[in-house]
Amino acid sequence: MTLKAIFFLSRLRYDVAIFERGTDTRIDLLKALTEDSFLDIDVDIGAKEHVPVRLTARPVSEEVLAERIEKAKNDRDLRISHNEEYMALLAWDIFVTNVPRQIWTTPQVCQVNQVRWSIESVFKTCKSHFKRDALPKGNVTLVKAHIDTALIFVTVYQTNIYLILANLVYQKQKADISLLKLAQFVAEFSFLLFIMPHNAQLQEAIVRQVLYHCKYEKRK
Image (cartoon, rainbow, N blue to C red):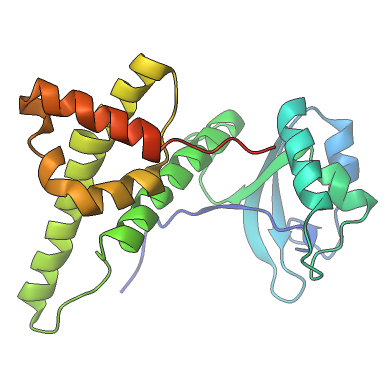
């Protein structure tokens, strides 16, 4: 079976070797980044097996950089060398992909990564609190029906519950709610949430509870 149009997008790991396309010449990524305001080049990655990819990079805001530096200073993972080069590369969003430039520009690559992360968060939430990854034992038809039902549930939860409650909370308190915390709340009180749009009094009560239990916690 031949697979066509299989695209990928991933952040570039710090320790991955980068080479000029079709050669064994290593690229000094930090030097290349400091010479241009953004980067979009064809390279090969991998020390043993060179994989052809498109590498894109653009600088992050000062606020994001400060957060990354603070996180790196508190990171106790000894597998990562937080040397001077590593800290300098934190100033950039660096991705590798095989999507052609005529489909995605460099800014669009960064935007798509944010969307992809949101999608992954939704499925992680449903897997953690709604047990949608537990496939039943049986024939192919039963398994397909379970998967279809799970996808329908994810869609209903995201559009008819999360987005509605998130908008209501933001309108009332200018606050954002946690997807994970709301999923836990929904798992316990789902029967109330499905009748919420049709009962104004119940809606007000649920919004108060969501605001109390599901807001993001402010960290120092």
